[in-house]
Image (cartoon, rainbow, N blue to C red; front, side, top):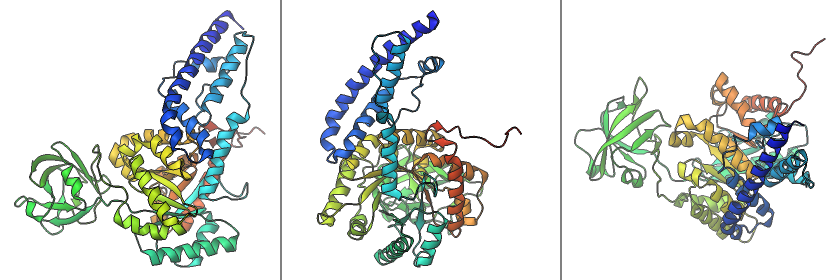
Length: 494
C-alpha cells in the first residue's frame, strides 16, 4: 500500500467512525418517540434500521464514496436495508487497511437478513410461489365487477401470472365484492395457491360535482371560470363548478393552483369573493378540456385537513375486515389517520386477525409523514406502501415523480416494508392490447418494487403475461440497487 492510500484509509476511518456515532445519537432520539408505538416485536428491528437510515441520509456521503471505491471497498450505496452492519463492515475493513490492531466485522447474516425479511413480507402480503416459477416481483391485478364475476376470468389471470387481486371499493358494492372474493378463493383452492385480496377504501372524493355554463363547456388556456361552495355563490355569467367537498374551495387562496383530470388542465386562483374562487386557465390541451361532473380535482401544494376515513369507508369496512387480506388506505396523510383506520378495523374484527394495511401515498403531506405512517401502521399490523403515482405526480409535479419514487423505494427498503408500484403500468396494453415503448421501460423499472399493480382493461391477461416476462428478464440483471452480473450471451466469443 502506498503512503497516500494509508493516509486516505485513516482519514476515511476517522470520518466513518465519527459518522457512526452521530447516526447512533440521532437514531436513539427518534426511537424514543417510535419504540412505544411498536406493539409487534418482530417489526422493532425494522423500525430501528429505518431510524438509522434517516439519520444517515441527513448527511451528504458523496464526498467519501469515490475514495471508498478507490480502496476497493463498498461505497455504501446499497446499505438501505442494513445500515449499521454495512457501516461496521466498512469501518472494520478500513481498520485493517490502516493497520489498526483490532477490526471487528459484523456477522454476515446482519447484512443479508434485511433482504430475507423483506422477501418474506412480500410473499406474506402479495402471494408466494415455488422458487423459480416466476419473477421475484409480484403482480397485482385490479378487478372490475362486470368482468370478474366468473371463476374462469380469475383462473385465466392467475394462469397468466397474477399473484394477488385488487378490489376497488369505490366501485360496485358489497354483493359484487363478495362474489369476486368467492371466485378468487375458489380459484386459489383449485390451483393450490394462496391468492391474496387487497381491497381499496374509496377515501374522500375530490371531483367536480356540478357544472353551470354552456352545454359541453370546454376550457382552454386563458379562459376564466369559478369554483363555488353552492349555487348561491355563482358569479354572474362566468362558467362555474361545484366540487364534491367544500373543503376544496375553502382552502383556495389567491395564487393557488388547481389541477383537473389528472393534470390535463391547470388553473390559478385570481380572486376570492365569498363562497366563490375565480380562476384563469394557465395550461390546457390544444382542444381544451370539457368541464363536466366526475372530473378529478387536485390542489397541489395545499395540505387539506380532510378525514381520510369517510362514512362510506366505515360502512365498507364491515365487509372488508372479515374478508380482505389487505386494506389499501386511500388518502392517508397523518399517523392519526392510521390510528383511526386500525381502531375501526379492530372494532369490526371481534378479536380475530386484522388484515394488513397498504398505505397509498398520494399527497405531499403523506410523503413527508411516510416514516411515521410506516411505524404507526407496522407497529400494529403487517404493512406495505403503494406509490400511487397518478395523484402523487399531479400533487408534487410530474418532473419530480421519477426522483421521489426512487426515494420511496429506498426508504421502504430501509424499513423492510414491501412496495407496490402503481398507476398506469402497461396501460396501453391493458386497455388497447399494445404497450408503448415508454410503458415497457416503466415496467422494467418496476421490477425493483415488491409488487406491480395493473389497472382494469380488456387485455389484462395478455398484459399480465407480458409483464411477467419483463420482470423475469430484469431479475437476471437487477436486485434493488444491486446489479447482478449474470453471463451475457449477446456478445459471447466463439
